[in-house]
Amino acid sequence: MKTCAKVFAALLLAGLQFLLLPGCGDKSTTAAPPSPTAAASPSAPAAVPAYTIQVVGVYPHDRAAFTQGLVYLKGVLFETTGLNGASSLRKVELQTGRVLQQANLPLQFFGEGMTILGDKIFQLTWQNQKGFVYDLSTFAVEREFAYPGEGWGLTNDGHALILSDGTNQLRFLDPVTFKVLRTVGVTDHGQPLKNLNELEYIKGEIYANIWQTNTIVRIDPATGNLLGTIDCSGLLTPDDYRLRVDVLNGIAYDATGDRLFITGKLWPKLFEIQLKR
Image (cartoon, rainbow, N blue to C red; front, side, top):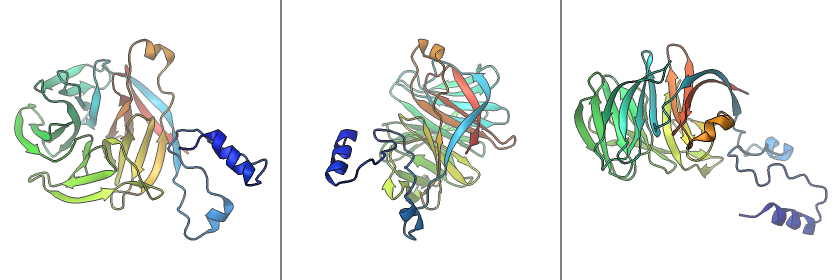
């Protein structure tokens, strides 16, 4: 990748002086605004809406939870955690962060994303190519299922499971047979957008954490095109970093109350947020 200095030198050689280079060296996934010429061109891609967030609530979160999947259902959170020897499925009290119910995975499994469909909980593992189906009430394992490649995030649209694997591909799976019904490639201005991690289906869109960033993207499940980017920077305070924290990960939606929650791996807090333009 060219550095800012190389870009500036090239422009000088081309005879372009006094050119402002906004965002040079910026690692944000939000694209720079198109030029007036590009905006007027019928073939130019439409600008992806960029959002920031407003925090409207803060709740305790277990600092030992390496959060992978997060779901809000009927007043409580369901959460899966990762790391070998520390992977689990949990039911968590929102207001206190207290674990109400827990099932631990065997030591050889690194737990990943999770979703709830009907009265079943579906959970992925990272590199074991194996998933688990639990009873929603008892957390008893009812079935296991297999899939090729890695398992990262999992959500559902009310009919199909939607799985991310670290690439830009999302797989739609039959929740009974686990056969792939279709796949969609997620793109940002025509380029593959990789590292799609935890997923949440919200009002006909797929929200996805981009691993190792503070960005959440909104995805059209029919086309894979981006519908928006959400900058979630600045949530933790310096005091929160006294102990180790990891990356932003975990999206849950309260459909009844129209509330959106996010957290991160080993974060001491879970946030209720609203989107701002």
